[in-house]
Length: 608
Ligand SMILES: Cc1ncc(C[n+]2csc(CCOP(=O)(O)OP(=O)(O)O)c2C)c(N)n1
Ligand SMILES: CC(=O)[C@@H](O)[C@H](O)COP(=O)(O)O
Ligand SMILES: [Mg+2]
Image (cartoon, rainbow, N blue to C red; front, side, top):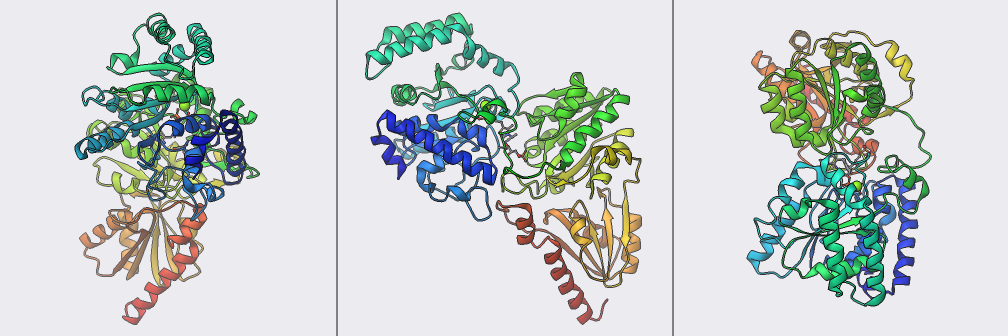
C-alpha cells in the first residue's frame, strides 16, 4: 500500500509523488467531474500527515470529505481512482462503505470535530491508544456544528489534533468574523517573518522545532502582536501556525512535534485552492465542483432562480436573498451582482440562515432562503420553531431536490417533501418545468404571507433566460389534468412528470404543482373517474406526497386502489441522474412497466 511506501520515501521522491498525484487527480476530475480545486490543495498536506499518523491506527477524519482524493489514493484505492463518482465506482466523498480507513462518512460540512470527540471517548473507554486527527477547512469551520464541538474540546479533556486547512475560500471567498481572524493570521508580515525563522530552524536541525527559543519567538510574536486574542487559544486549545501547507518537510516536522502532546492542538495550515492547475488557482470557485470538461453549458433551475429574483427585486424592494455559502450553486450570485445590499451569504450556517430569514419576514421583508434540499435538513427545528410556528413569510428555494447524481447519498434531495409535509402552515410547490418554476416564483412572491417551499432539481436544459422570463405570469398554484385516459390516473409532482408524460398507455395524467395543500377539487374529479390512481414523486416514498394523497382519498371514502411510486426505503448511491432514475424505476421505461403491471392486475380483478 502506498501508505507504507510514502514513509520510506525521500523528500524529493515525495515531491515527485505529489506531482504525479496532482496530474492524476486533474486528469480524472476533468473527465468525471468532481472537487478539483479543493483536492489539488490538500496533496502535500495529506502526504505529510500520513508520514506521521496512520489511518490504520489513528482515527483521521476529513471534514466534508470532498478534499480526500489523495487519502483515497494512498489508502488502497489507487487502481480504482479513475472510477470516482461514476455509477458503481468510487464515491467522491469519504465513506465507510468503501474502506475501513474512512473512519467517518462525510459529505455535509462541520461534522468532523464532533465525530472526533466521539471516537476519542470510545478509545478512552475501551483503553485503545490511538490518535484522533481532524482535517477541517476554513469554510467548514464556519458551521455551527464545528463551532459547537470546538467549544467542547477543553471540557472533554480532548487531545484531538485539528488540522485547519485554510485557503481563504469556502466555495466562494469565506465570510464572517472567523474568516477575518484567519486572514489576519495568514497575511500578517510577522507570519512572513515567522516563515523565514522556520526556514532557518529547519536548516539548522533535523527535528525542526527542537529549537525552543525560535519557536517561542514565533509563537509569542504571532500570539501577542498579530492576533491580539487568538480565537483557538481563548477556547483552551493550543494554536500553532500558520504554516505553508505545500511544504511537506515542514508539515511533517510540525505534525511530529504535536503528535504526542496531551492537549488539543490546532495546526493552522495555509494552502492554495487549485494548487498547480492555473485555471483552478485563478478561479477556485468554478473549479470547486467541476463538471466534466466538454460538457456544454446549459441553463439550470439555479440560474433561473437568480435571474427571476433579480428581476422581481427591481420592482419589489422587500425581496432579500439568503445563502449558506452557496451563492454560485444556488444561482444567487446573479442576484448578488444586481442587489448586493439585499444579498446575504452567512457562511455554512443553514440554521442561522433560516432564523435570520424568519425575523426578516416577520418585519415585512420577503426573504428568499435558497438552500440545497440536503443541507436544509440541518435547519429542521428552525423551519418549525422559528418560521412555521410564527407563520413567518419566508420563501424556501430548495435547490437540488430529488436525485442529484454524482455527489450521491449525502447530497440527494430526497427527504424534503417528507420532512416538510407534516409542518403546519407550510405550503410546498414542486414545479415540473422551467416555465412553471419562474411563474410559481412570481406568483408566490406577489403575496408571500407565510412559509412556502419551492423545490426543484439539479437539471440542466437548453433555453434562453430572456424567453423563459418573458412568459412569466401569475399562475394558479393548483393541479392540472394534462391528459385523459381510461386505464388509470397518474398524479405526478415535480419534473418527474416529464417521465410520466412519456408513458405510452391510455392513462390520465395530472400535474400536481402543489404538494401541499392538495388540490382536492381535482383529486375528487379524478377519484370519481378512476378506480386506479398512481402517484409519482422523486422523493422518499415513506411519508411522501403519495401517502398524503392516499390518506386524503381514504378520508374521502374512496374505494379504489392507490399505488405510490417514489424512492423505496434505501439510500440511493451515486451515478448519473439518468442511471439512478433508471435504477429506481422512475424513468419512463421503469414507470411504464410498473404502471402496466398494476393496470393488468386491476383488470384481472375486473375493476378498471
Ligand atoms: C452543511 C453543508 N452546507 C454546505 C455544503 C456545501 N459545501 C461543500 S464544500 C463547501 C465549502 C467548504 O470550504 P472549506 O471547508 O474551506 O473547504 P475547501 O473546499 O476550501 O478546501 C461548501 C459550502 C456542505 N457540504 N455541507
Ligand atoms: C462538497 C459539497 O457539498 C459541494 O461542493 C457540492 O458537491 C456541490 O454540489 P453542486 O456541484 O451540485 O453545486
Ligand atoms: Mg477553504
